[in-house]
Image 1: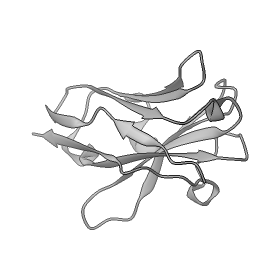
Image 2: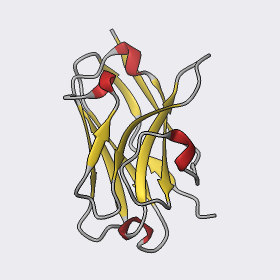
Image 3: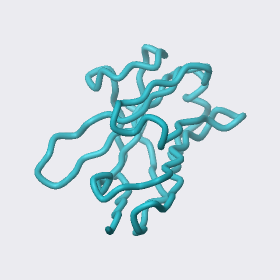
Image 4: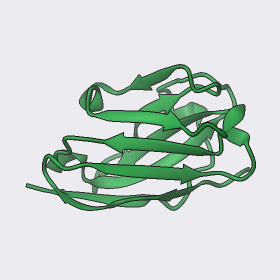
Length: 124
């Protein structure tokens, strides 16, 4: 099972932006879909965005639509999550994972290979 490496978290004020990065070994993202998840204190992990294996289809949970954008780089080795207009409720540890199905699904059970995560803190 491949492992992923997330980075780019930090502390920002409400309304600010952050860009998270997810690195994988080889070009696995050319085949597999990718998803960004988050877990807040005391809550279950939830998926917030997904992107298909070819990078052409994306899907978002309602709470982040219009604010977050998931993308892949041209070499299909990195996945990003651009987060704009951040809110205090976005505070969480963010993880990326991959899905062998290759489709941009918001079904969390389709994913595997979470890394250590990166902490995002949004202050009001």
